[in-house]
Length: 565
Ligand SMILES: Cc1cc2nc3c(=O)[nH]c(=O)nc-3n(C[C@H](O)[C@H](O)[C@H](O)COP(=O)(O)OP(=O)(O)OC[C@H]3O[C@@H](n4cnc5c(N)ncnc54)[C@H](O)[C@@H]3O)c2cc1C
Image 1 (cartoon, protein in one colour):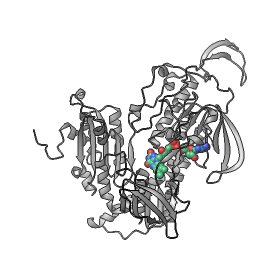
Image 2 (tube, rainbow, N blue to C red):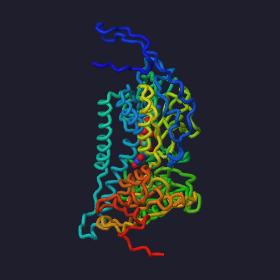
Image 3 (cartoon, rainbow, N blue to C red):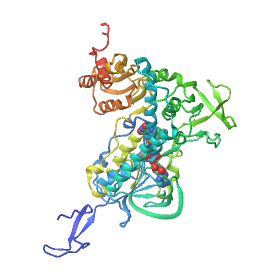
Image 4 (cartoon, protein in one colour):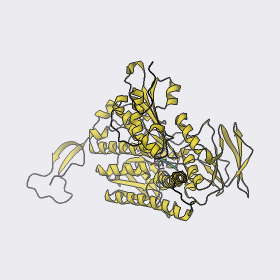
């Protein structure tokens, strides 16, 4: 039987010799542990933009070369190697990866289930409802194809149960996987009380009711994955008819008139669900367009397809006051598109999310938190405190689950590498070039990397390959040919006509399922020939990516010929 060393370092003395009898716990040898002196005191800034890759430098040589061991100031008898604060996509992914790498891990989560916002009140329940809405909308058009269904009868209780079952399946699966990995889940609200200690106020029930019991957990390393929460406008009345995304997902009833405050992805996704179920929508947005971040030509296609959901799209308009009346919530607007005050049966506040950095006792551990509540980290996800890392929504935009998961793996690997003296793991870094964004509306809008609007604004010369889905056999067969796939390639003189792909976007059904290919192409530094000559199966919507590349290359035969100059 081989007994692996628990520490990296130099063997100073052997306390047993060949043939000696030992019992469990006997000291076999003495090791002078390597000291992890080079942990940077102050981390560089986090990237608060979607262009994470450009904003973050490559792994510094000093980091890559380091072969760290146990942190100098770590107490020797901690409750765990790694404590993870928060059990969302960031937290559980970090915990699972670290456990798989051999660490003893504790996750502290205030709610009854792990999965965080994404699984409980975010990505997953919203998609469960959006799927139902998409099918309901789809069959409306079947009349024209000779297939008629009656008007839908909506049983909200059943629909809610379906959504809860979806959540339950996933969060139950996570709990089982935590058990398999021997990751301990401690239920309660965590607050740092020292650089190596977290106090947990035990909670119970379906929310965060405190039991009054407290315990303190000690750790060698910690990862802060405490996420974010929905922002509220200060003048909004406390009234059940004013909800955030969590309240909207509760789906208590379907209002006649609904106002969406904020024309971003979350508001428009929830609006899609409610309008399909029968609500009329108004949306108010301070900026000059909905779904900021995506190219306007793509958003235009979505907006045309969805025009009949809205009574009013108020752009460059602010909500300045609101009051609860017997008839509903009366809202006052100001700005270019402002109408007279309007009364709504339901108001959804979707004006952004704020990080939870100021609610975890960060000071006691010495963790620096910005005025807005973010925690700055370097490319290894390390905070200004060398043995504490942070990941997910709490470290900055984009607040997306897939970003949190990738950051989680980096932090877990660095920590395992440092504690086990594995230089390769210890040099892990978050160096993804791009992070895709998707609005799971109908049609979906998805984009990744440089957008055409950004290229224009930044004076970056790009060659565009645009493939309209009116030429896609599959889109036509599906009766959904409104989509467009667009790829952007470097067209700078240095690219000599063979520029790499810099970005791409799509609008159309299942765009979100396809944008990953464009992200991969960017990561691999593909050019138009690489993508165009990759054989995509026919007939699929994914073909439109290959064809958009062919358009940029000039070899597409699925569109009318371009005129020779
Ligand atoms: C309606 C909606 C739809 C969304 N849809 C998508 C989508 O389609 N795709 C996508 O990528 N992203 C989506 N998001 C965003 C996504 O949910 C977040 O980016 C993701 O959950 C962030 O993960 P996280 O681990 O950083 O934080 P969170 O998921 O917020 O998890 C943090 C966890 O920490 C716990 N916690 C916080 N403080 C403490 C404390 N002091 N003690 C103990 N526990 C604590 C919280 O209870 C929570 O469980 C959506 C969000 C919303 C609101």
